[in-house]
Amino acid sequence: MILLGSTGSIGVNTLNIARKFNLNVEVLVAGRNIELLNQQIKEFKPKKVVIDKAEDIPLVHHKNVFFGEEAILQAIQESETSTVVNALVGFLGLKPTLKAIECGKKIALANKESLVVAGKFIDQTKLKPIDSEHFGLWYLLQDKKIDSMMVTASGGSFRDYPLDKLQNVSIKEALAHPNWSMGNKITIDSATMTNKMFELMEAAWLFDIRKLDAIIETKSLIHAFINFADGSTTAHIANASMQLPIAYAILGSCDEQILKPVDLLEVANLEFRKIETSRYPIWEIKDDILNNLDLGVVLNAANEVAVSKFLNSQIGFLDISKITMNAINKFNNVKATSIEEIFEIDKEVRNYCGA
Ligand SMILES: NC(=O)C1=CN([C@@H]2O[C@H](COP(=O)(O)OP(=O)(O)OC[C@H]3O[C@@H](n4cnc5c(N)ncnc54)[C@H](OP(=O)(O)O)[C@@H]3O)[C@@H](O)[C@H]2O)C=CC1
Ligand SMILES: CC(=O)[C@@H](O)[C@H](O)COP(=O)(O)O
Ligand SMILES: [Mn+2]
Image (cartoon, rainbow, N blue to C red; front, side):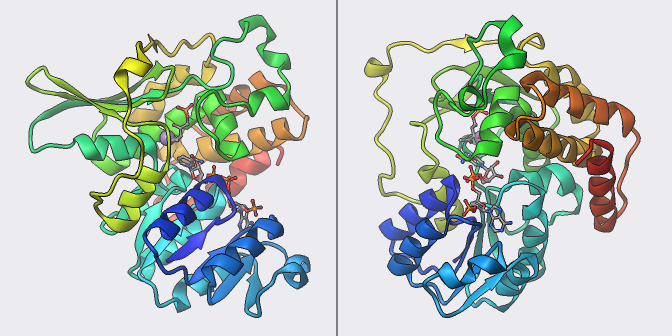
């Protein structure tokens, strides 16, 4: 495989699966965590390595090291392997997704932003999502009439925080996810509920359905529900680990035990909550977004700018959703007619949001 984002949360979990199933890793792509990258190089012996910055090349223990976006695309183009795992974070992941598709590779896609911003231009024939809820939905699919689908949310870092103190939370508090250990950007997206908005859009593209909703399940043990037309509902239950979705996305199917099964007696009880707009203001525009998936590129660009400002202590926590909702208001009429326009709109929105 080619693994894009090997030093991140999904990247490390992917290498756990590669180790377990003795999978070949042809290319490793990482950013600036060179120490971890060097450990990965030693163990998995890739033929090629790509990193973010030229200045870090001398630190990498490999003779075939390249840097930058073009090198990532070239590595995909030149690779022999048929599988690309895209665990890059944000808009940066879009071009590699498009390149992998152009090269006819199978793509295991953690980079949900690719679908959020450009779902209508992405050929899904060889795409498998790495996202716990979408894996759950896929697992539950049956040849029966579906009424609606629902994914769960943990509620994020501030689900129990006093509402009047939300604006002044610290970065450290925001990065303390209750159930999952993930990269910084998605952890903030979980706290604002933007991650769930992205996931509804992701589900809309993947399953061609608009009757979609989300509910908080505080333990992240149930990941998805399908409501069938006959009135029955099925739920996907698994311990909170990305290794199961990753294994299926790479291997296709799997009969070996990847996770310890959920012990319901140990769990004892589950708690469900409504997603309230008072705590998660972004949820006010959920229906607008689901009725107009073209807005994904706007939502994503504004959110990336806002999250980065929050992580740089330039704005308060509630300003993240203010910035994204303001951008949605301003760019309400966008409708990209080509992939090139997606890149133009992305740029325009970033400028508007003060990137
Ligand atoms: N984590 C999770 O459990 C889940 C994540 N996802 C999605 O998966 C994707 C990855 O998330 P996650 O693993 O949490 O993110 P992380 O921030 O943990 O990892 C991101 C990876 O991308 C690398 N990277 C960042 N910038 C560059 C660059 N310019 N060039 C090359 N590599 C770069 C980072 O390198 P370095 O660290 O070395 O700088 C790191 O390896 C996101 O789209 C997220 O929404 C979806 C479901 C669950
Ligand atoms: C593990 C995974 O799939 C994440 O997308 C997770 O869902 C994030 O947690 P939230 O439910 O808090 O958004
Ligand atoms: Mn998810």
